[in-house]
Image (cartoon, rainbow, N blue to C red):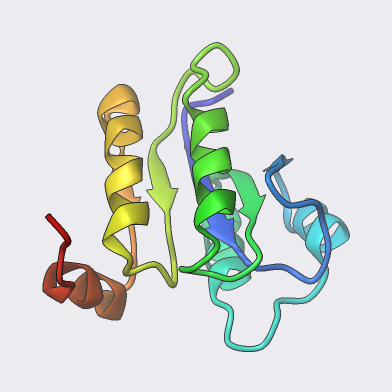
Length: 132
């Protein structure tokens, strides 16, 4: 059942924040989240994941890349392996902020999964100044 699952964080027109939504079809996605907000790419990634037969755990965030508390709450929920035994990837479209990406690292180690991001977000992450 959990062989191909992606956790994805993104903006959406509707749905609760800091809540995990399980989507197995495009119909689930449309009913739970509605249309994607302007300049958002999370719903687009969600559609692609579902079209490639991945199950989806979607976390609605207030603003992609900036709603730090929304991301952290979702990652805490993902940390419960009793609820989610396997996770192929964590998708963070629109996130170039090192604090958010770094917070996903323990989950990637826990699940032996990867991070999915965009080329421009990876560039932002790699070139960001880090406070020490």
